[in-house]
Image (cartoon, rainbow, N blue to C red; front, top):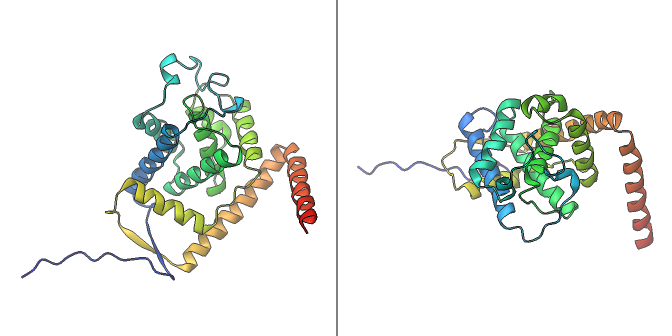
Length: 250
């Protein structure tokens, strides 16, 4: 008698299969490793050195000791993973938050035309995690909470990091469900791990995901505008410029 082969469910036009990252701890670990690998590849493939002061650890160190000479070299995957895992474990963040972190990180690199280098990767990753945790989770981790994790960083530094990150993103913190799913499958391919249990992502669940992200992003925008009133004028000027360009094109 031939041994039975396991059946693998496949995605279709109506449904997509995703790992149940919100429940299973191993799935969170796999997602963090995949995100870490993506960050590592970004650093390894960087050919330029386009940076901003707000992300430079030599100017804004994360510890009182500052940046050691050896830390100015490109980090290996284990160093990146330890940094990311420490933040996610201490702040009790989810795997979904890790995926959105990568979305924001890559969006920043594209929008601001920056490179991820040895002296900036930690603060860029920290800024992306900060935004992702606030947009994804209604019970957001506050900036002062991150100061408890990274003992030597100040609330003022965290606030400024958040403000400038938002400006560089042009306040675009929305993540459609289609983008989220694409990043998930790209990370799964990157990790090469096909042995995770799958659950069904129906159209209804995909819609709920997108609505949840949209609602949370607007709640976050309202909180941010209360904290950083200057961003209101930044948004107004940005939208005015876009409208003017659109009118000229027509």
